[in-house]
Length: 374
Image (tube, rainbow, N blue to C red):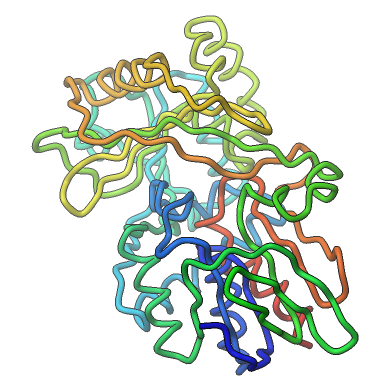
């Protein structure tokens, strides 16, 4: 039940961005309450690859990602979930892609980007004879989001955070001495508040969402049975080079895009990022395609899934059997990668509008909470 207590910080949304803000506030000695409409995380925070892709970011995203990397390692130990320091392997399956990896290594240095030799490439669990080069990004991490997000929430609860689950927030108002969050179970008061509900910014703040052109990106993702195939690292391909800012900024990225447009334009039509990670039970998470709209139709056809399975089979050199499939949704904006807005005194509306919430949320939250609670 909602109580009359006033908290230092009230967080609306218990996905990874909301939990990151709660963790940052707890670390600073603040009292925290978290509200969420669901009983547990069911959105983008658990419908992802579990890929903490720090190295491939650029600009502010890279700053947030490197800070978040350290928080993931610390919180994994504290909250008891596994964080794997296994890096990312980026495959080149053409001369233009190999040149891009060399450019990236030259820019970032050997500590962040290591070009793999022929023996290491030959040992990769992909179709024989298809890879012309590869790079390891050793700083990248992997978690199982279905383990990590609940474990983080439980750890926060054990450290004094009050969770109000199954609670709908209808309005947030600022008064002279508090921010009042009006919910289906009563009012909750905080000195400060963070609204972190991912792609649903427009539910309470339609004008803000319109101002920042917030839309929803719809993903097609699959979980497939690949038999005895084992991936130690996350695996990215040439289409990934067009999705991540650090890689897409390289001079050869234009040549990669031009070749894909010439050879397989359907991949660009669905904005494919062909990549994979492996779950603890051995299943591969395979994805993903991207479609953008404020409101998506409720119907999914098989076209995107068929493309993913076709490209996945080519990548791994074997047929892939679907175990699960799902639609991912995240917020997107052409104007910013990170929405941080102040629609009222003491209130911040925060959304990662670039699909990299798992990678950057802890770094972003540190900045927002420091400014809010100082």
